[in-house]
Image (spheres, rainbow, N blue to C red):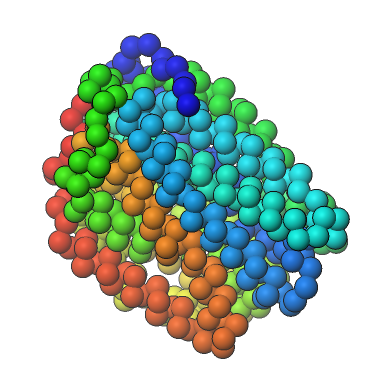
Length: 434
């Protein structure tokens, strides 16, 4: 894989830095839009690929493929992480965007089970694997790029934008869902309407690619690119195994909670709380808008008090309140109550999500930063977060849905122990260039 790097280091001006930070985040928005479109429309397309069984069984099959997509993400993080650490952040952003665009278009074009039989779910798995490969690489490159482009004194604030764009991708998929629900009947959405958002995703990938091609490389990579090209990956990983474990454990807690309160929540509100699909989508979309607005404030706070106190706060709140919050959502009989509880849960989650890309990047030197950020993140998603929906539905089908609430709590408690024992990345940051 080859991609040219824009000549010269990134300009130091504030306006130029903001332009590059936004440009480095735009691919993140598109990648996550494509990724989240799958669970957002699972209620409608699951019948096209899994025609037999009740609604829970169909959602369970769709969730299994969603989890499979997470399993390939570590490979994408490995390949693109090493590529970003050897060839540059910008080339890795370009390649991952190309891959995601093809994967999204592929999902849109797959015939239904009635047309090609078992090959329909087989092709769906193949496209999700392509998207997982891309997303694993995109997160590593974009988190590293944005962290390195941000000024030291305001690094938390500007890096929080990366998760804002992630949420914008999720929100965009929900807004597309709401528009299609308002303009198409349920029968039309089930028959063919669910394909539209995947076509939109492929088109957005082209737009993002044009923007990424105009980016400059970061100064951090420019400073080491000569030695980085010949650096050996395994010795670097052995030298930083503690940091890799820290990222893995805290990510396991944070991203599983995130998957629970965002992508799984519309289905939970329908399948457990009893809300209509339209009401559940509106509640989830509004909660994401509020959640998104919290991030710059939380990022700014991390510049004042450090990353570690916020990670501890997230872990403590998650350990104490996950069961009460999920139990409350399960019995929320109206959208207003569900929204209030869900916003509270997301507020408890925000100290992690706002600092997530940056605290990981600050733990590693430039030569292994993209891989260090991306690989343990992808592994934690593959093992825990990607299976969150499948785990929840499995417990529900077995008649013990509350076990899932305690499972989330256990992850938070383990994350708390790790957060307490780690050093504060904001105080010992290994991002040296300003």
